[in-house]
Length: 329
Image 1 (cartoon, rainbow, N blue to C red):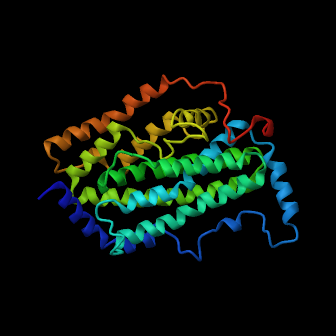
Image 2: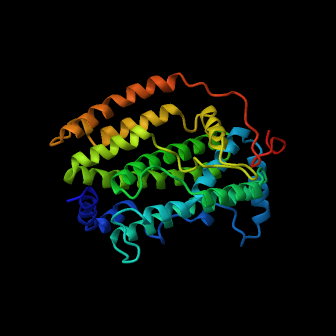
Image 3: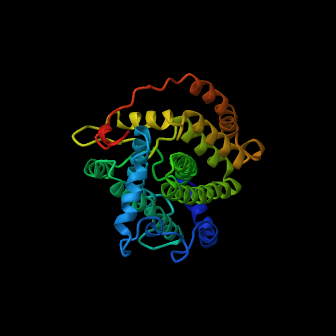
């Protein structure tokens, strides 16, 4: 039997558990927070006063912070790309509306709220150029992305396990910085988003854990493959209006590293957490090739940590079209 057919069989086996996954890792629509819970209420007489207060507090936040918040928002708003990518994964049958397609739709529904609330906050803040942000978002959706997973569910679930934890770290750190500068509402907003991302990380991590139980060697090889080629962030093709795909993501990453929102050390830490989560060291019944993959993965964090220590982050802030320095302290 081909590798593709084996993966399909494994996905069909796990599909029987999708309903329990949804109960464990997703929250019903009526119970989960919505963007309007966290923003000034336009139905209230105090709406304009509340917006004025939001704008005043927003003035305290520094330039790199705004760049990171905008980049995070754009990443969240490129959701159509992520949904269409997941519906193409082997074993996800959107036409037949199987269990996996149901998961993708409900996961998308939860994620969609993140871009909604952040976009509205940015719009009300008066600190950013919304048209430039909107053009970057449209470019990112137009350009799509290539994260190197193809339609392979094993590789895709490694990617999502890693990426959801990375977004948890990013949103949680933004929350902490916002709180430090006195923006309690933005802090709460980002903390709630981070909570969603952590639940989703646990979900995709459990999918991988379940696959390891039935197809350990191929799952190990998929894990190694993804770490060898490195996890590419969803916003890797980020670009501003009038520009080609170039260094915008690099400059965004520099801002994130400068203020400690997401660093090279975090990348290494996430890798180690996944190795521990899936108990890679204790894995039994592996083929010779998978044993070599396991050895590679066990040594990788320390190798990458040494490389990350040598990275030099530019001290000069890049000026983005999204955020004009004149609008920010």
